[in-house]
Amino acid sequence: MHPQLTIGWLLQLLMTGLIFGSLCWGIRYSPQFSLVEERLQHRIIRQQNNWWWQLVATVFDPKTLVMWDFLLAGLLVVQGRSLRAIYVLVMLASVDAFGIWIKHHLKRQRPATFGKSTPTYSFPSGHTLGTTMMTLMIGMLFPNLLIRSLVLLGWLLVIGCRLTLHAHYPSDVLGAVVLAYGWWIGGELLYILITR
Image (cartoon, rainbow, N blue to C red; front, side, top):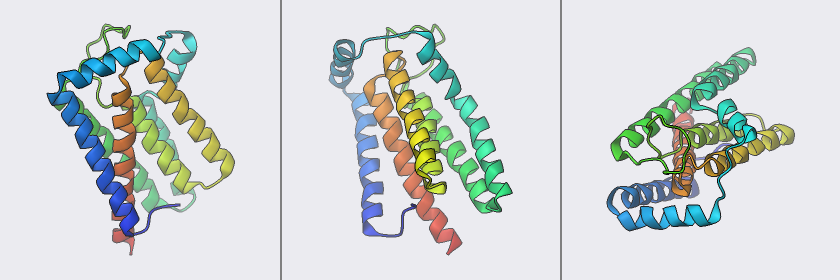
């Protein structure tokens, strides 16, 4: 089900913007925010660096999600839904580009316990951002219960993966979910306006 032009959807768009903005502000300007989150992460989330979570990270890597997005667009073209095919490509590309811009603007360092030596930024989680967007789009485009259940399971695995690998702080994951949801609502409302 896609959003309609109602006050409820506009309020959700506003709320996601406020939540995301608050997280950005806390990360950028409040050392206490990051300190409290780091302590909570070490106490609550036990780090696991096993093959299973590495596999999840690889399958749902942002670069791999681009391939999945092109496959989804191809399926939509075959179904005669070319406008929706363009939509799914634009939505993932635009939210990823914005997420990368935010990462380089805030420059939040990854948790010190993260195992990879390649220096990359942490907020928002790229894996979670792309997977959330794909989950929302697939769930809306294919209202089949089995398909929705499978993409929801994949989404939950990605969230678990990013936290248990200590690749991200909880706010990195939350921020990615909130950003993707707001972006999806905005994109859907724009799509409705364009196709009226």
